[in-house]
Length: 322
Image (tube, rainbow, N blue to C red; front, side):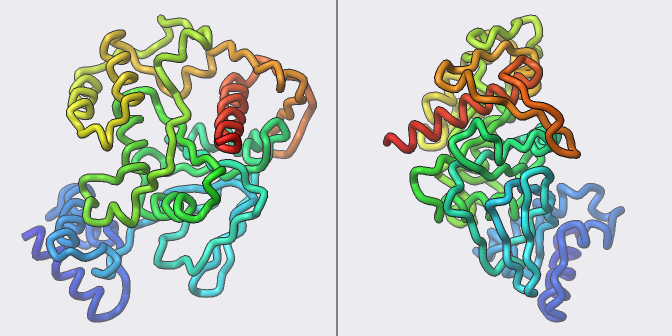
């Protein structure tokens, strides 16, 4: 009954040429479907069965991803232009609505952030245009597991940006964080028939690495113990093929299992990050939502910001020298 209801709505969307979303389908018969995940799975299975993309069924995904950074402009099919800025996130339009992108020539890096709360903090701190970095960047979040629109944006950037621009990901140092990273880089099982158009192979894992916590002077007692679900997920990922489970990822998962602890992004707030000598004299701008409030040298006030300034700069240097 559930499948036939999805087929019915899909047929209606195709005949009337009025797109429907997965959310629309769910709310057409909540008692029948029970939960949104049922609709998501049925639509994806339907597309895979007919070897079609979801958009070919006139079923659109609801956007949830955000992007920050003044170096990106999105032109929509209807003529509207979406200008992004350095201090707040803009909703990423669905791919079917975008006619073209414009990216500033001076963009030096792209950062994908797993969590929206962390993304919003980085927007307020204006990471995308921070003077301590080698150049401006673009910050993206899919708010956890990314929606298709977010993956399409990352894929577009991966395919079109010059090779010296790193595309980095900041995720939790646990099995679920790595799985989210894998969705961006290698694609997902549920949309494996679309992975060629969605997987962004250039994405690299910036952090958080469980193996670097000692170097950051993070108290091991501050780490979160892994759960049975974490352990099960980690073992499942370790069984993946080497082509989608790089050695670095494998070592980090084994490190997590051995220590029985996981490192979430927020743990960096307790770190004592040591600024690199060659950037130690650079002034660190502190911001509120209303703009800069003072200038100061690096301090432990924003350990996550220091952490990212160091690591993004290192990756940019590495790519430029390559």
